Image (cartoon, rainbow, N blue to C red):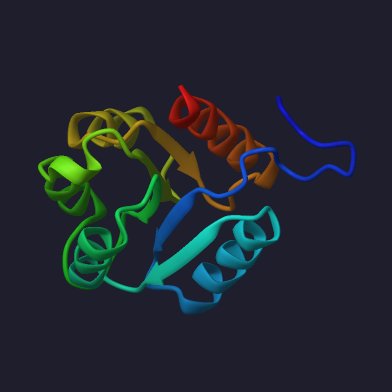
Length: 136
């Protein structure tokens, strides 16, 4: 795990999109990512998430599975079809950690399946790895 002596992530400067219909949860998660030095956008439904993804071209997307207009699985499938997101880190954020939901996440194109509430140190690890891959 790559962290500076002050505990901040070394993965600064990533563009991160958070798609979650829980406004407070999205804002809290965004604040943690911003503290780590990332440029963050939030969306609160699937259509808005797809629109922001096209405009913002994120390096990483944290996507709630239960959205009001479509499932996060469907959003992930559509994001994976966009050439500008084919290498983006897609992380499913959900309250469902069972094998069926994890398998479904993998089939939809997610790279990781994280059960809420997410452990921020694990999120930092994911973003650190993504930043290292971007530097190659």
